[in-house]
Image (cartoon, rainbow, N blue to C red; front, side, top):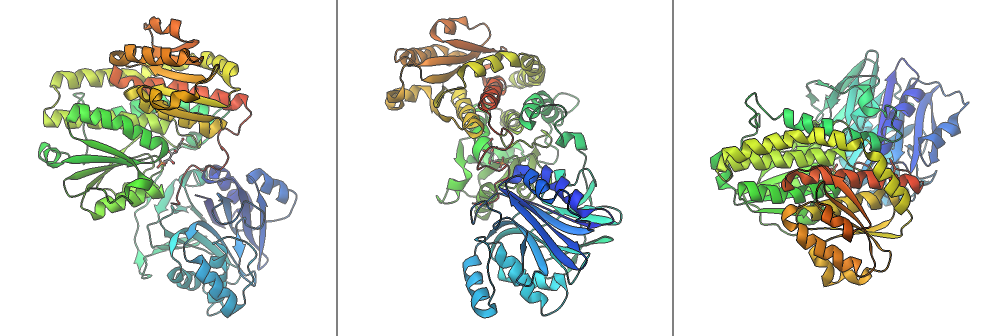
Length: 611
Ligand code: F6R
């Protein structure tokens, strides 16, 4: 986590860096800081809280500079505070760094720096050791890249670091290991950042920096070196998004904008995978019948919302392709010695493609010989680059911390993959395949129409926002949506919410039902509808307040519920794409009613690059 930006060039570094940091606030917003090279000195300003606090701090100050670095923090080592905010400086104040990641051996480095070099540490962070190390190596030569290279050799862990030095000015030196880093290519100005949105306003041509690489940036050049400091030739990556994609475009929050972008994201994801005959094309991803028949099992591994997409993927792939699928949270997968071999297909799902838990699980599966297919939103991200094949979601940039459009495009990929595998293996008929694709392709239109009724959900949120706890229940695919709905609500509204398979309630959790307890009951699976009604009756009998989600036409549920949200009719398998949307909107409006910081919930960050 944490966002970093560096700039060197003709223009005012301060404004460009602050602007870039604002686009990276999704990566953390515990504190923000900037270091600018001014008149042969490094001037550091930092403040706890979001970028606006930093802006207030420096408002009115004359900080004109052509080179600088900035940081927005998600705290790992040391509480959010002014002192722990980045940039950190070397003992003599001639070097400053910003860091995203964790320096695992910082305790031993810190001891060494204190004992041998009499360094005084100001912060509780692991990152400060980097500034001191580079500062000490700068005393051996005035070349920043030499000093950074030597420091890199001493550090273990995950990091993207950018350094500046007052003794080697007009230069940024950055290194990357397991944390994202890009370089932006301008004219007479060049950039460094954690992610593309920070640079979109200025450049469309970038270099994706690889693990172990160092990049040396001056106003006129961007040079990349491998871990042995050999020059590397990198292809330019042309960014196709426009600035608007990373702006709110009149919506009050990115989350609301992204909820409304779902019809477009889903149809993009489908259309890019259909040929003129309406058949699924995998373009370069090789999943032949022979290969598919060889896979004895599939693992879907992911975190959070992406994991919930995997739960739907399991049902769909098992049903269509008849291959056993296990779904696991990435942070558990690699530590349980999973049964993976060359007959395993490992599917990683990740919006950012930078989630360290997912990346580590992927590497573990790769080490054991599995074939790696990833479902990823961010083109060129680490998960994408380390996979054998990538199935991109075409959600566009997702800025709000709470994932919405990434989730529904991930579900779309699960349907496409399931259908493709099923047809290849002959476990579904050509007729079923065609009809299903037709129905899937109709979802964006249905969703677009449904979103026009957002006022209905807003009214329900106004009625029900003031709860201490909420339960989400469902059966079959609805239970996967219950998990996602519950996560959405808790992460942005801070309400203690809990999801459980409806049939499992009676085995313990029903003890928590009291008069007035709010339960969101999903009942969109026709073949489980009656069973679900029975589960709703059980909680109603305990006095629960039930808000049900059902398909239009299934009106029997009204007599069992306090309120009902109707989604457009669709086949059972496809209901997740529709039923999750009222839950996203409900969470959004509840959080709004409670005055929460919707796009940047407390304690969270968009991209989780620590274990
Ligand atoms: C919740 C949310 C997270 C992410 C999780 C995985 O709204 O966004 O649970 O889904 O951190 O992130 P990615 O998909 O980037 O690997």
